[in-house]
Amino acid sequence: MLNRRHLRVKVLQALYAYHQSDSKEIKHHEKNLLQSVDMVYEMYIWMLSLISEVVNYAANDADERAHKHLPTADDLIPKLKILENRFITTLNKNEEYLTSLKKYKISWTFEPELAKSLFIILKNSTEYSDYLQKTDDTIQTDKDIIKFIFKKVILKSIMAEQVFEDKFIFWPVDKDVLQALIAKTFKNFANDDYKLNKLAEVTGNWVDDREFIVNLFQESIRHNDEYQEMIGKKTQNWEPERIAMMDTLLMKMAIAEFINFNSIPVKVTINEYLEISKEFSTPKSNSFINGILDKILYELKAENKIRKIGRGLIEE
Image (cartoon, rainbow, N blue to C red; front, side, top):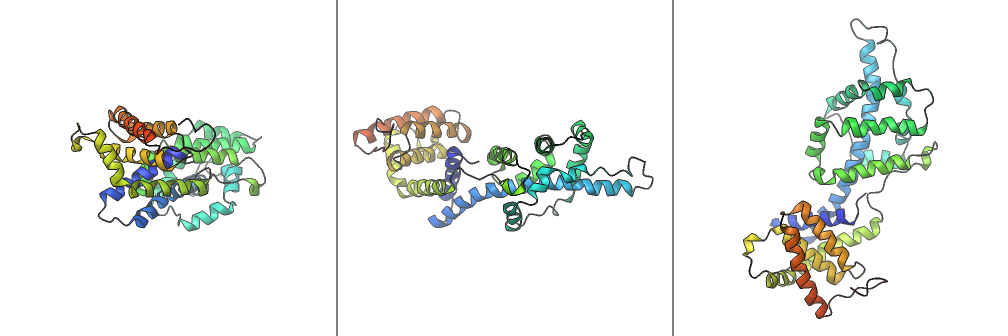
């Protein structure tokens, strides 16, 4: 699921788009921010549906083999066990999943060869052969072959990778979150009663997390000039063009958290943005951001602008 660091990255992406755009309509960009979170869930549903497509292709494969010009005896014996896989049958009864398929208009007709190519890889694997020969299947063994399809077939497929990259602009960033959502789904689907098996949630607490990202986005924009001035005073020896835009945005977000989010410890804020800078900015950004934020934080404390509330936060 999306944790707070992932959510901060979503805000960073939205702020970058805002500052690069000619449109400064905050509500428009705020809507795009929320859509970027929803897009992670959409990507999750697309992946679940692709897993289902690969499994369902077993029927197509059996039909093609049976209707070959000169089918062998083996070709005439349909291997359809996977169609009864508990994980897939449970998934296809899940109301939230079915509703989401309609909401996002999920259909793989635009890429008809994908499921076929993935199934061929699956069919030729020893893991699939072993699965077909098993006679004492449980919900766990059924999940094991689906995990194999996801991890070793789909995620290893260049074709599948390209499809998701083309469809989801933040695929390289959100891919790890997707894997966590799928892993959570495997954990959740543990009951023979399909009604007890739940899909993963995109965040731990969307009500709180939605408020967090919207407020962080708004505060970073509302006080943009003020925060820019703070940063400017501490970077007078730096030529403006030498300061990466991502560094500036990360520092403004951190300052916004220092001042406006009284339940988030200062150390947490600093550590989060330093970690994000490692992935989204320059190699030297980490130490640069850390040094500037330390100076700004010192002044903010002296001016009594840092007011943290809650047990363990007072010393901040």
